[in-house]
Length: 96
Image (cartoon, rainbow, N blue to C red; front, side, top):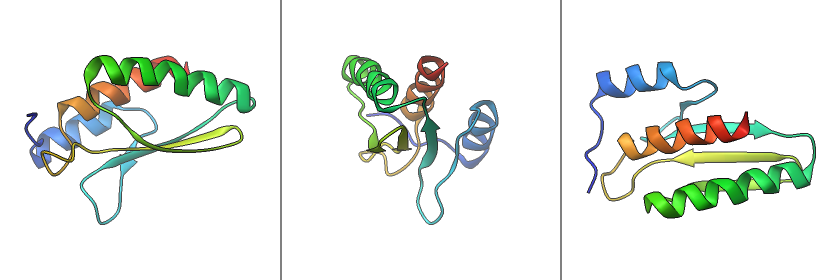
């Protein structure tokens, strides 16, 4: 099981993650990705699904047309861990 990040480690990690913010009232991070159209948004989700399966760490996400809203938190650890930071970094890379 991954360890929950300390407040300082979380703050440092979040500062390096473009577009990601804290979720109010919850130990989680979130980002809204906006794409050209539904096809591009779905292609992004497919690429992320492959990465998430390899990591054994899956996002909470919601898709409407060209937007994908993502929330990351490691439920077993009760908050944000290095796995969330790694997946967020990969999502940013895949989104371009």
